[in-house]
Length: 357
Ligand code: 5AD
Image (tube, rainbow, N blue to C red; front, side, top):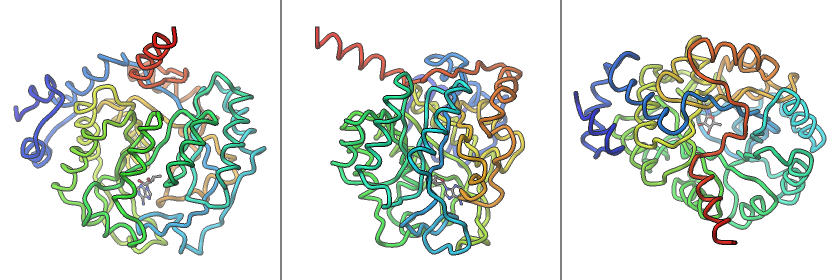
């Protein structure tokens, strides 16, 4: 029905076909669409679910995104920053627990100069040479990204948030532009990072056409990772009274992204787990294959409040990794604590070594 076979076979659809699929939004996990998404995920990654240790190292942010709880103008939150030593402690704890990917995420915090970030990356590289380092610290100039890459960072997460100019304007103050965001993503790719993009589902003013544009943009960018989750209002933002994103629509987007980008690494996000107690499991059933437990110091976890009621004490806590693994096994997936690189990365590396020899 409705282009699902075509999507499964060709991993692409045009604007109108995508729109029709989304407008229908009548799918259940037993449907062909989710079945096709799971089959597609298994083609490259089997039933593995990859683990990443998330270190939220600063909730200071110079940006004022209308949806985000750590926006600059929110005077109500307690701000914190981790020192290099504290970040290394988080990595050490994570390493003990078995993590081999560390995601350093923060607001856009100019306190951390390029030199400091480079120093942090080099220290992690030296102490944990077998681990992947992922950065998620927003927009920086090309040269900064290159320095982070040269220092040993492997991956970079930067959600595009929405691929439509008009919609982007409704979510961000005018000093932020979609053009600059896209430029960053293309720069990161060119440098060699495994790159992650993504967006919120059900953010204020989002239309179905916007979602179609998001999917088409992802197809064009071909990121290695895609992070999506439902929009959830935050009480200290101007979107406090807006409606939150829909779980079923988020699952539909996960499945479509899996089918459009079969090799992508796609997390079942904390936001999805926040709006639905079974959200994380439903995400895997829709084609997601990554989970990012929280490794930040416990005393700061509640301060990294991007949205209301963000879960941080249950199975998304890195301390509960064994329980989370059991849950994942119970629903038929295989927890995988290895670096879990994008499949194309290995091919690229092999290609490089052939070139060298
Ligand atoms: N609801 C859901 N997701 C949010 N993010 C920020 N604020 C919210 C919110 N209110 C997401 C953004 C950002 C990521 C770190 O968190 O997409 O890129």
